[in-house]
Image (cartoon, rainbow, N blue to C red; front, side):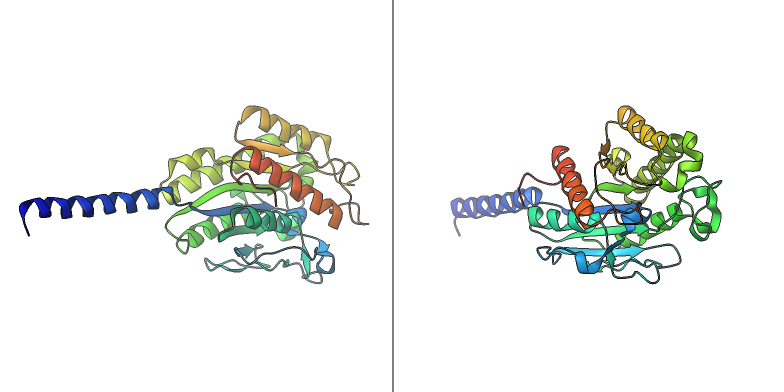
Length: 284
């Protein structure tokens, strides 16, 4: 091979290497959603009322619910159900969110979910089996359980994963300590963000977006002080986003969103995720 041809060959190899590097850099990351909260996030709509159009084939999840369903780092195909005995065949608004995300992203994505009904942050409030969303809850801390779950799950994710947001719905369980809800929730959000930075080494998670919703005006457990705390968080934190759910319909228990309410809330949450740039621009 002549010197000129050698230079041409080396140039071609270098060009191909640069092209491959650009393709890899431009390739979309693997999205991850973290979902947490109490019963409306866990899901209480009967599975028979799940819309026929839903498609979950791109979604893998890891589901935990304290000691009702202890999560591991392993993922499985998303199949909506809950760990509460007697109503295992149930779903929540998040299931529709995952459908919409799958339709928009058109690529595999992952969900890390830790939810349990009837749970509070404040340890002075009554909470299911003594579980609380507080690090002060010692062995029954749902916040610690979520962080352990995240630690286990990130070991199983593809190397190019990107945690998009924390999807949160909770607060009814804290209505007896509503004056402290702002500070309590801020501590939860700060802890999750800080833990993600420490676990992954990615400093951008210090400002991880949080998307949450309010409560139906018809809810027997709605607290105006809790809603005010959420809105205060939104004013203070540019990465904390509140979606209005005040007009949504509920099951006869006057506490949990019914199928229509869950579906409408999912649409609003998805729209908010698109607005803040974490869900693409498609129209499923």
